[in-house]
Length: 62
Image 1 (tube, rainbow, N blue to C red):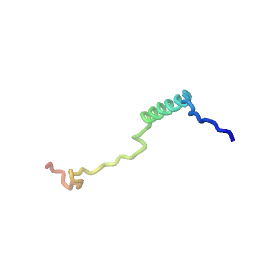
Image 2: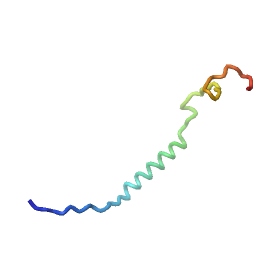
Image 3: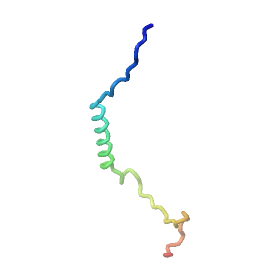
Image 4: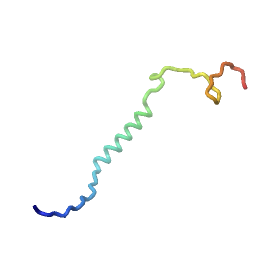
């Protein structure tokens, strides 16, 4: 058996991987900005609640 000294590998800079990550982020951001949200979800009215979370049964102001 031979004895070899292990040496750590240097850092490998991969610009192609960095470009792919950046383009994926830009594409995801762009799609998130232009994705139609109004037609995807129906209009739901949420009853008003007081600060305890109880649904108000009256429309009179406090």
